Length: 430
Image 1 (cartoon, rainbow, N blue to C red):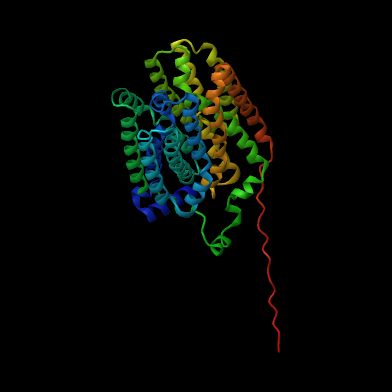
Image 2 (cartoon, rainbow, N blue to C red):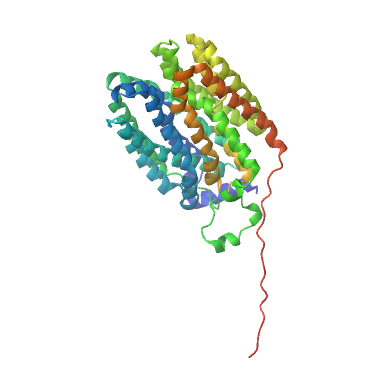
């Protein structure tokens, strides 16, 4: 019996034929990811109404997006530790409450500080869900990590697509308050249901007691977060993750403001937001699937290089309705795959024992990138124009492209095995 068949048998025996089925677990994680997609990818629809409702500026409102992304990313190491320690059920329940309440309240507040606080709550919940779903996929599909990560990441990229016309309709007919409330309550409830379904595979969690850990085959235990952070491999991977994150976050936060400045009709902008979500999700699945065959570094080189080209030409050709849509779609198609490629490459290099925690540290690169993608990006665009903003993003994507050729040439880190000291017991006579 193969290792995969043995794993399947153990999980069906422990959880039953339904909950022990890894495809049921993957689909449940996909549903959870869809429920947090609006928090990031529908945000651009809310920016202009929030500027009017809170009597503020676009730059100030976009710092709310920056705060959300930073918390969604920087909380992941802590959230990953708690997920690795306690499993998904409790953590997903907490996350569902934070997301449901935080997103719903964003339409009720009457101050920028209230908006920031509510969006921050949603960000913490999203961090737990994102890290937990990626960890579930990698643990249940050790033989197909690229595919599984691609499906999970694709769910996050595609998840907002069916909601975009609904949210736009609510904004037009019922206002900001109702749009946030309806989607917030729905998202929170569904995440609570998913929390009751998700499980980690039998034997995939690290034991809590030191005595149990010492009995394990140490060669099969992956790098701990501290061990990982001491390797140059991690920091190269992290710098690539940060660099490629910037361009897509600028698009995510500013599709509507950029389109309005370029003279694009509102109906075209809403269509572009929907198609961005489609391209984002398909790209994650497509490039994740390709990476299992072509290899992660080669896939990164091709997709990140194309992303740099599309970012550079966007402000040049983006004044045309059709080219505006096409170029945005191509950027998102060659951007979202970072969330398909980096989880498996991180697990390939450092193991999956601490998958949620380790990926949380890597994911922090997105938090730093959000400073450029959110408030600072809007400020630079206001001060110097969109050409400067997208050219800088293109250079960063090009850096990630080049480093994908360097990464395979660096020796894979070797984990130092603990030294076992045997104590001699001597007998003494009195």
